[in-house]
Amino acid sequence: MKNRSDQLVEELGRKIITGEYANGKILPKVEELSEHYEVSRTVVREALKGLSTMGLVRSNQRAGTTVLPRSNWQWWNLDVLTWVLEDEDNRDFLLHLTEVRMGLEPMAAELAAKRATEEDLIKIKDAFYRLQQSIDDEKAWAIADYDFHEAILNASQNDLMINTIKTLRKALVISREITFSAAKNSGPESSYESSTIEALERHRLIYEAIITRDENLAGIKMRELIQRIRRILEKIYDN
Amino acid sequence: MKNRSDQLVEELGRKIITGEYANGKILPKVEELSEHYEVSRTVVREALKGLSTMGLVRSNQRAGTTVLPRSNWQWWNLDVLTWVLEDEDNRDFLLHLTEVRMGLEPMAAELAAKRATEEDLIKIKDAFYRLQQSIDDEKAWAIADYDFHEAILNASQNDLMINTIKTLRKALVISREITFSAAKNSGPESSYESSTIEALERHRLIYEAIITRDENLAGIKMRELIQRIRRILEKIYDN
DNA sequence: AATTATTTGTCCGTATGTATG
DNA sequence: CCATACATACGGACAAATAAT
Image 1 (tube, each protein chain N blue to C red):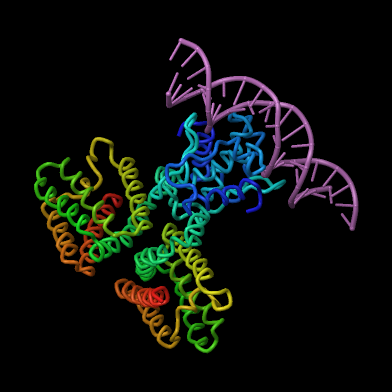
Image 2 (image 1 turned 180 degrees about the vertical axis):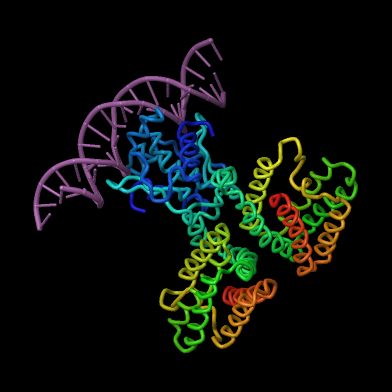
């Protein structure tokens, strides 16, 4: 993210997502944008191409470039996701993300129980053992926790699932950085787990379900874990 | 999809996805692409910008434009999705899509049971009644079935979920058009439902769960319905 | 139904920026 | 530190499409 067109994509993208450029509105014409942002028309065109690939705008000859409705946005684009999360008016979007996660992560756990190779299982085991060793070390726990979920995810052998959940997690990390002050969050999952012992037991159930290849149970226990996270989240936001 | 840069995005995008331009490979430089495809450098630059927004390439000064690994691709971009599905070597990707669907659609049904407004319920009811009336009319069934699922989805009140599942469904329609000859598929879901009566009963269970606001049951029954679709799919592909 | 005005789309000559060797 | 090779950036010109008259 350094060249001019990327910068312009970000500036315009944010304005669209915050509603400053509302749905259906026509953007200033290329020449005006070029002039206003002090870049060449080439740069403006590239930026518009980027925005249109993100589903934010559509250009038509003579009619100008119009802002598309939210339903057209490429929500899984990390930039779009970030801008939406950073927009004050979209804070409940975080809940929506968590709901999608609640759909996907249990399914990934099921698939992992079904398909994990020996190599996958070793990684999952290793991460779980490190979890057990780390109940007193918040930082080590966070890392092990991250690895644990990562190993399960990779064991699902479903590229689309893997990619989607990884994007989702990045978004959650971003939102956490926004919500809590930077000092408080020490790692991906740790801020959630108020009671580490309880969390460890929940992880154990998932772990055991996967190594015994009990698909259903793995899904159920993963779901329970995320449901707990969700409840904690709701509490935070209800205040 | 008509201007030159869009065409070029499609040509290059397909070559990347089929592996003709493999991961890590450096694309021909802008000038050569411009020459080879007989377009201006402006058009090439716009196309590269599009491809980079899709996560397919990254440009670096002096080093050229390189193809990114699959893990960077924007899988939920409908173009990417389409090209992947149309690639012979990626046929099992369809199964992956269905697995994601199995994670999301039951969750959407749960949320619908929880949040459906009166207006939502009316639409769901209407679609279900039309399903009942259409057991002998394949075309009417397909439309009602589409509306039924659409109404449930919209009742979830989760924009991200709605957008994702809609994209997913479009992809499934595309893959079906590829798999079966154009003559055979008459609608979004109809090719699945070999026994319409059984399908109707499954829909009824979902319908009743939602109007009685039984979240869990709605999720379970939706899951069963999709699981059935999946089994049918697997049979087709195993032949 | 034909004309015009406006805006995107396309082309290309030129110049600058940046990392590599 | 210089030369090289590539992407990046600039801007003037013209083509094409289409909304407005």
